[in-house]
Every structure is written in C-alpha cells, then in structure tokens.
Amino acid sequence: MTTWHIPQHGPVQQVELRDRPYPLALYEMIHPPGTPRQGELYRIVIFAARLRGKLGALHPDEVQGVVAVTKEQVIQGLHRKPTLAELLGEGAKLMAGGEDVDPQVRLYPLGTARALAQLCSVEMTETFSRS
Image (cartoon, rainbow, N blue to C red; front, side):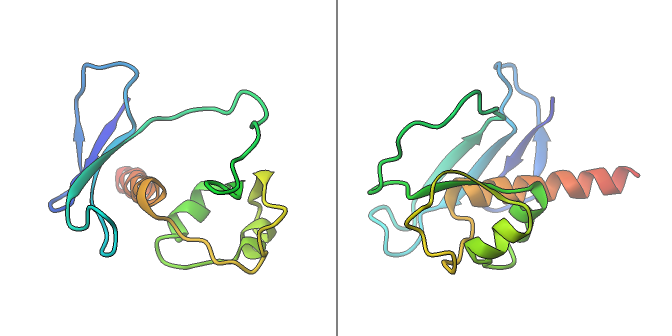
C-alpha cells in the first residue's frame, strides 16, 4: 500500500513505512490565523476506514451532521464552496444529523478534510500519469 507524505513546503512524495496498518497519508499543516496555536505546524495521519454500522448520537455543539461525499466532490472542494443542497444534488448522502443545517450553508474542506482532498488529488494525478 502507498503512503503519501504531504509536507507543508516541498513536493508530495511516497514514503515507505513499517508500521501497520499503513496510513494513506502523513499531512503537515500550519494552524491558521486567529487560532490559539496560529503559525505552528501540526501533522495529520489519514487512515482508510469503513463505516460498519449506524452513527450514534451527534453532539450538536461539536457536529451538526455527517455527509458522505464522492471522491470527486472531495477534490473539487479545494476549488469551490458548494452548498449542502448542491452536494446532495450531486450524489452526496446525509449519514447522520443535518436536520437543523440550512441547505444553503456552504461547505469546504479544512484540516483533515483539506488533507484528504489533497491526497485524492495526488492519487488522481499519479493514476493519470501512469496511463
């Protein structure tokens, strides 16, 4: 399995790891302005997982809903800010919560979701460059 290193500065590259399970990616990001750790580097480790049952109760002060989006929607999220209604109209699925979320709210990747979007972009580029 391929593990990608996506550094804050520098080229994206494949890395070899001995640990199991293998992560999909090691992602570096700088805490954004206005956050308590503004300007500091942090790292995200991304693993593949599969939902094996229904989601439990959501804590509304933390998560208002869970939306499953397609890989293409993840990648496109780097370049656009679609509404929840647009995502659902394009095939995304509301997996939990969301009853109180305005369908016109705009969604875009931050943190882990941004890392996943960049990872998907890298994988797509690699796939096309091999063909």
